[in-house]
Length: 387
Image 1 (cartoon, rainbow, N blue to C red):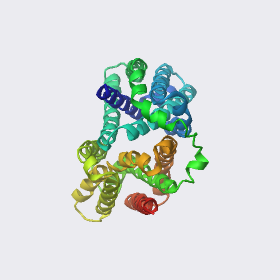
Image 2: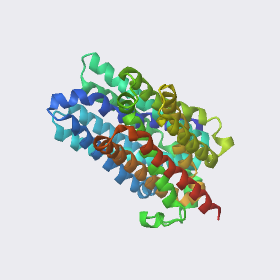
Image 3: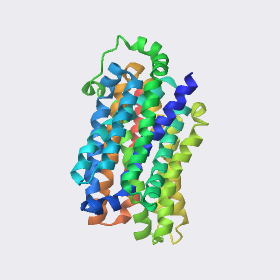
C-alpha cells in the first residue's frame, strides 16, 4: 500500500515539472499571436513566482488543516485549471490572470510533497523525487513542440498538459485514504504542536543558514542554465548548436545525477552529500572560467556542475526534520521553498543586467559567489547544529 502511495507521489512530481517548461517553449509563438513584446514573458514568470512564494509560506498552516494529500490534490487541480485557462487565453492580460492560480498551486504542492517525503521516506526517495521533477520538465517541451510542428498550436500544448493534470487530480482525490493512513501516527505526535509562524521559524538556530544556502543553490542553478548558451557563444566562441546542446545537458546532468544519487544517499547521508556536491560545483565553476584555448574543459565543467549540484537540493530538504524537528519541518520547508523561488526568480535577471553593463565573461564569477555562499552557509549550519 505504501509503495502505491510512493508511485503516486513520484507521478505527482512529474506533473509538478510538466508546466515549468511550457511558457519558455511556447512564448516565441504566443507573444506574436497576442501582440505582446518578447520581454513580457518575464511578467508572467514573476506573477507565477509570486504565487509560489506566497503559497510556500502558507504551506504549514494549510497542511496542518487539510493534510498533505488534500493540499496536493487541490493544488494540482488549481494548476490544471490554470493550464486550461492559458489554453483559452487570447490576450496577455488573461495570461497574467491565470498565472495567479498557476503559481499558488505550484508552491503549495511543492512544499507539501517535499516535507511529506522528508518525514516518511528515506533519502534515496527524495533524490528520485526530484529526478522525476526533471523528467516532467524535460517532457513538456516535446509536448509543446509536437503541438506546434503538428499545426495544433500552443493552445493544444497547454490543453494536453492540463488534461494530464486533471487525470492526476482524480487519482489524488481517489487515493486520499492512503495518505491518511501513512500520516496517522506522525500526525498524532504533532497534535500538541502549534502552527509555527514565519517570524518564529527564522529564529530557530540554523534556519537562517539553511535559507541562505537554499537561496544560493537556486540562484546558481537557474543562472547557470539560463545564461549557459550565451556565455559559451559570446565569450568562449562556441558555435550556437554546440552551446545549446551542452546547455540542455546541464539540466540532464542534474536529473541523471539525482537518479544516481538515490543509490548512495542512504549510505552517505545528507550532510556528506551536500558537502561533496558543493565542492564539486566549486571546482567545476573554476574549470568553466579557465581562459584556455580548448573549450572542452569549459563544456565538461558545465555538465558536471549539474551532476555535482544534483544532491544539494533534495539532501537539504530531506535533512530538515532531523535538523529542526518533525513538528517544525513543514513550516521550515515552506520557507525554504520561498527562499529558493526568490533566488531562482531574481538572480538570473540580475546577472543579465550585470552582463549588459559590463561583460558576460563574469558568468563563472557570478556562479562562484553563490557556490561559496552555499559552502559557507552549509558548513556553518553543521557547526551550529553540532553545538
